[in-house]
Each structure stands twice: as structure tokens, then as C-alpha cells.
Amino acid sequence: MAEIVRMPKLSDTMTEGVVAEWHKKVGETVKNGEVLAEIESDKATMEFESFQDGVLLYIGVAKGKTAAVDSILAILGEKGEDISELLKEESGKKSSEPAAEKSNVETSEKKEEKPVVKEDAKDALVAEASPSPLASRPTSQPSSDGRLKASPLAKKLAEDKGIDIARVAGSGDGGRIVKRDVETFGTGGFAAPMTFERYTEVPVSQMRKTIAKRLAESKFTAPHFYLTMRIDMDEMMKARESINEVAPMKVSFNDLIIKACAVALKKHPQVNSAWMGDHIRYNEHVHIGVAVAVPDGLLVPVVRFADTKRLSEISSEVKDFVLRANDKKLQPKDWEGNTFTVSNLGMFGIEEFTAIINTPDSCIMAIGGIDQVPVVRGGQIVPGHVMRVTLSCDHRTVDGASGAKFLQTFKQLMEKPVLLLGAYSI
Image (tube, rainbow, N blue to C red; front, side):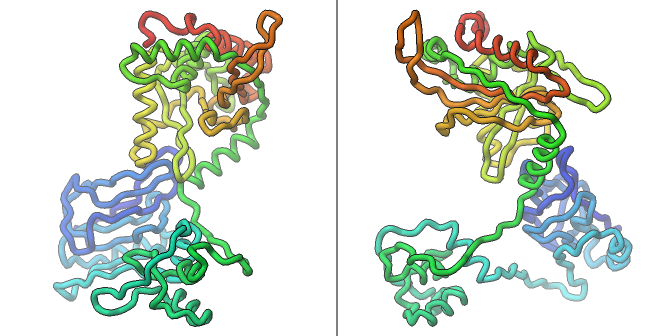
């Protein structure tokens, strides 16, 4: 009997998903536990396994398309089974009309259909995303069947400009000539001055939608206030150098900051809290969220019980998070449960910034770069290294004095590393 496979809810904040890839085609057999498709949620792309055996009779969401959670993703059943009644029952539940592929039960052979790509849109994307070559390019070579590969838009543009398109080198897939190639032809690889308006529109990813929603809710719901402090990093720089001489893996300044935050939070539970609407939760455990930039936006995987972990353990976890975040391999358990968040832009040369609170946390710490600046020691101006940090606080749970005391403890731990590093810290 045919069964409906629905769009899964892969995270607590997911409301819709995008099919990144289908691993099966209509008419193919699917076994229980076999990967049916790859689903892009608001935070990651994950493999979706089938929970039953059967033949893929219907695809309800085409590759690259979006569908709401619990909407029809596919139908599995017996070969040749009539699914028209099942689809009729589901039609009233659909909130949109996703692209669908249905099996032809009348024929034994199916012809694979390739998705249609709008040439104009594809050329526009290539023109924006591809870097202009700096050297002269060879002329295009015809394909193996003798045809010159060029998009319709490129052909039309070449005709309007009076350019022999056979002399234009293609930079598209397989040497295909696209709009940008015609525009830069005869200019030494540099685009001619723009004399008309042009822009590219890209659909908003699931991750970016969720980021926009959550940050807007945080910024306009939680009353933010900010506390900034300068920290002398000279001693910590020396300590890090000594640590990396004996540590099993290289420890970064970010790892040291995470550890110092975790230790300071144990002393200041007011900062390690969460606004829960009708009550405030004071967390006794310390789970540090670490903001990681990825192409689609921002992920915040969590270093759990960070106060109890050695620096090498924190370093290993964070490195693993970064790799898996960029490969879209993080799982929901990796980004849930944070009690405090650290966002570090120092490696990009940013001196100071403010961050939006990652709810339901009460605070987030923004870390700037370490700058060599003149400092006063013993009445003398000498060179020193200073790092600026800014604590964003939710005024519903954290008062100015509470936030300031936390920063004082954090500053003390960073400026006197011996207080931070115990016998089992490395």
C-alpha cells in the first residue's frame, strides 16, 4: 500500500525545507534505511533516510524547491500502484504548488527529464559571481558534435554588438559562452564601463530566513545594553606561546577566551541565565555557543560543560565544529542548549563591535582583535597589546553592575593566566 513521506522537521526552529538533492528517481526501488534525499534545513543540510521499503512513485518537491514541514515530500508504494486518490486527499492540505514528478504507470520505460534553466538568469549569476580573467583568452572551440556552445542571451548580445561569437572564449561549464564573455570581449579581460543598471536576485536560503527572524526577534524584544572593556593581553600572549610548546594541539586565543568565559560564568550565574517569559532560569552548567561564519550565514555550535574541559579539548571541538559547519554536516544536537555565546571577529581586523544576543541567552560577548598600542605602565608609556571586548546584555535578566562584575572577572583571568590555567587545564 502506498505511503506518503513527509518533509521532516530537522531542527526545533525549522518550518520549511529545501530539497538539495534526490538520491532516487521515480520508478526506482528504495530500501528501509537507504538515503532518499538531502534536505536543507535552516541550519544544515542532512541526509534523509527512508523508513520503509518500496518503489518511489511520486516526488512532491523538485530539487532546489522549498516545502513546508509535514507537506508531501514523496510517495512510496508498489510498482504500478494507483496513487491518484492519495494525491487527491492531500491536495487540500498543500499551501503551495511545488514542482512534482509523477511516475507513468502506463509505460515500462521512463525518460529522464532534465531541469530547465532560464538562460538569462543563469548568465546574470555567472556575470556577478565569476571573476574577470586578467589575461587574453583563446577563442571558443566547438563541441564534439560541431555546435558552438553559447547561451541564447550571449548570442543575442554578440549579434547586437556585431561580434563574431566564434571568436569569443567561453568561461561557462564546458567552455560555454555566457553573457559576461561577450561583454568583456576585446577589453583585455576587463569589463567595459557599466552604462546600464543591472542586479542579481538570489532566493533567501532557509538558514538566512531563520537568522533574520531570530535576530529581529532578539533585537526588538530583548532590551539590549552594552559594556565594553579593554584587556591587556601581554601576559596571555606569553602564556599561549608556552602552552603551545606542550599542548597536544595548537590552542588559539579564541580557545582561551572560551575557557575564561566559562570559568567567569561559574562565578556569575546572573550572566549565565535565560529569560523564560514568566521566570528566569539560572543555569548551573556552562554551555558556550561559538559563532561560526559559513557561506549562508551564521551557525552557533555549542561547547558543552566548557568550564570542565581542557584547552586542548575545547580547541579540538571548535576546529571540528568549523569543518563540519562549512560542510553542512552539523546536527541539531551540535547547536542546541547554549547558555552564553562568544562571537569573535578579531581575525578579520575588527577592533570592536556589538553583537545581537543569541536567545534565550542573556548575554553574548563580542571579541575584537589584539592591537599593539601605547600603554602606561609604572608611569611610563610603553608598547603593549590590547584587546577590546563588548558584552551585550538583556536588561530583563542582567543589570549593569552584574555585567560589569562578570567582565572584571573575565579581565582578571585573561590578564593573569596563572589564575585560569590549573594542573589539568591544557
